[in-house]
Length: 125
Image 1 (cartoon, helix red, strand yellow):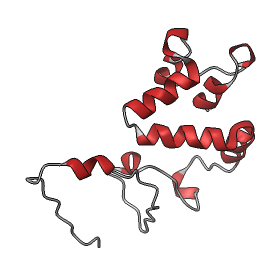
Image 2 (tube, rainbow, N blue to C red):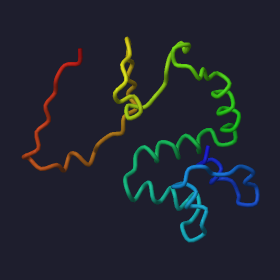
Image 3 (cartoon, one colour):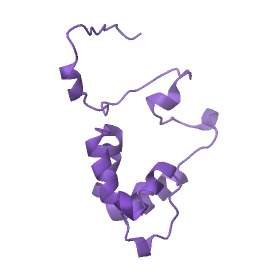
Image 4 (cartoon, one colour):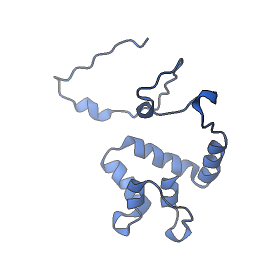
C-alpha cells in the first residue's frame, strides 16, 4: 500500500507510508515514486520491480483490493483454509501441502557467474 500512496500526488496523500524504506522516497531529493522506480531498476531489485508493476497495473483499484484481501483474512492460522506467504516468511514452518508458484525472479545475472560455480539439483520430496 505504501508504494501506491507514494505514487499519489503529495497533496492527495491521505494515508501514511508505514514502510520506512519507501517513506524515505517522499523526500524530494530522492525523487518520490519515480526515484523508487529508478532505485529498483538500478539495483536490480526484482521483488520491488514486481511490486511497482502491480501498483501501476491496478493503480486506482489498490485500496479496494487491499480492503477485500483484509476482509477475507483469518488471523488464526489453524482456522484458515489456506495460507499465503513468501518463501522467506515460511522458513522454519511446516505444512502438510505446499504449492510453489512460478513467480520467482529471473536470475539473468547468474549467467555471468564464474565457471567455478556449480549448482546441485536435488529432487523435492
